[in-house]
Length: 115
Image 1 (cartoon, one colour):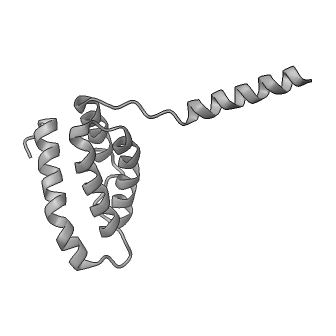
Image 2 (image 1 turned 60 degrees about the horizontal axis):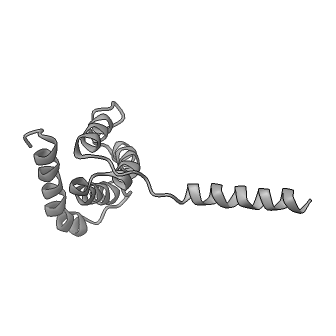
C-alpha cells in the first residue's frame, strides 16, 4: 500500500510539473503565420463581437510569441479589449491609438506585410 501511494504521489508531482512547464517560444515566422491565420479568418470582423473573438484568439499566440512580437500583440489585444466594451472610454482609446498603430507597424515590419 505504501509503495502504491508513493508511486501515485510521484506521478502526480510529475504531471503537476509538466503542467507548469513554459510554452515553447515561437519564431517570428511562426508567430506571423499564426496571427495571419487569426486575422484572415471570417470571424475576424470589425464589430465588437469580432474584435473580442480576435483578441481572445491572439491571447494564446501572444503567450508563446517571439520576443519581437509579444509587446505589439499585447498592445493590439488591449486596444481590441477596450474597443469591444459596451461603452468604450473614448479618451482611453485615443491614448491607446498610438501604441496600437505602432504595434501594427512593428507587425508589418517583422512579418513583411508592408504595413
